[in-house]
Length: 110
Image (tube, rainbow, N blue to C red; front, side, top):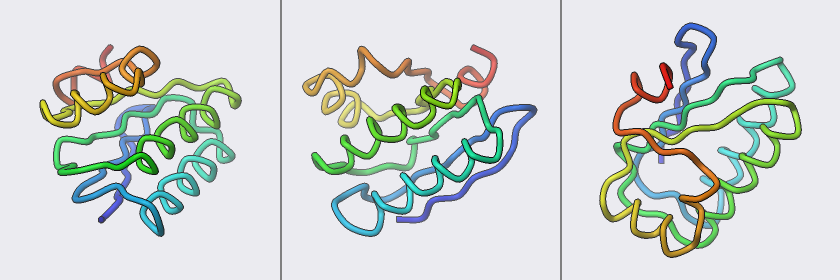
């Protein structure tokens, strides 16, 4: 699962693609969120438009990232979740914690 990030205005856009499952993928995402928060990042958008699948560890990683970012005084938004990913987030209640937007541009502007 490639994880890439770029700066768009004052927002760190983290692109997550493939599968977010137990192991290195979740550890990498959590580590990136911690590093960017420690560097002063406050606005984050996770672009999940290319995310095909996430398991319970992936959901946990999203919550972990949200916790780290909020503790640092920041905010996290999701962008581009497919219906399948939206369903998983809805079943776990994560959709109530993370605002979701249809596109990265909408999430950055929102």
